Amino acid sequence: MSDIPTSLRLHRYMGLASGPRLLVLGAVHGNETCGTRAILRVIRSFDEGERALARGSVTFVPVTNPLAYRRGTRMGERNLNRNLRPKEITRDFEDRVGNVLCGLLAEHDVLLDLHSFTAPAAPFVMVGGTDPQSTEWRFARTLGPQRLVTGWMEVYEAGVARRRREGLQLDDPGLLDAGYGVGTTEYMRSCGGYGVTLECGQHDDPEAVEVAARAIDHALNFLRLLDQHSLGGQPVSAAPEVLRLTDVIDREHAADSFVSDWSSFSPVAPGQLVARRHDGRELRAESAGCIMFPSRLAVPGHEWFYFARRES
Image (tube, rainbow, N blue to C red; front, side, top):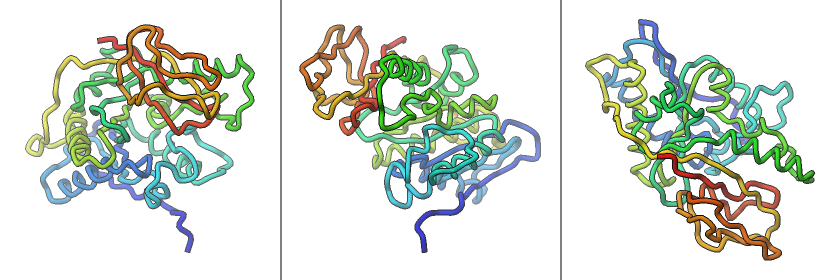
């Protein structure tokens, strides 16, 4: 029997009064399981009567990429959280999941997508747009982590434009397609809703599960979906740290190298040396800020690391 899954498992609770429709995703990347474990815990609490939905609906997808989850890998056949759009012709497993997932996103108003990461760092929320008073930003601020990162799509599109200007011949045509940067939250916004990606902590850290579970509670409370007698954790209110992505740097050659053991949020000063190209050219920080998403496994032509600056 093939190990390729043929279905997704969903859990949906619907209140008897109208209200917002929340979608909570786990394991969009198969080795990021804190969201899966938190979602299953919350489902049990609904089934055992500890929580009760009063209005609207909440749909849980504990394992959004079952092939990657089954294999314990980030991806099945490709990254599900890129190039997310309906496909008339499906070329891989993630295309088939994506067609179902796009339909699910379009049916909902709000998305909470739960992820984790490799290196030590504090949890953070990826948020879109520039208006800190928008509903999406207010939603993000209630989830628990008080570090927000924004600017993903703008920087991704700028990276694509630069690659096109330079006339690069790349093995992956997606690197020349701005739409390839679209993942769950971007597609959700294109459908008229809003959503955030919550990076809950390191992959195997038990505290990441707690961060995810608390965030689900906060999301349910923010949307006022729960019966007043079954409220979980109360939303938090604080002035978050905000970082805006400003640039993406591609790896040009396999011998390009970092000069330090960078991890996300590593601070850099103006002019500080960050990396060297294979031919000796230096890459320095243009301004004060931090390194984001450094990838020592990046192949030539692909994203290597990002710069971000602190806005508050």
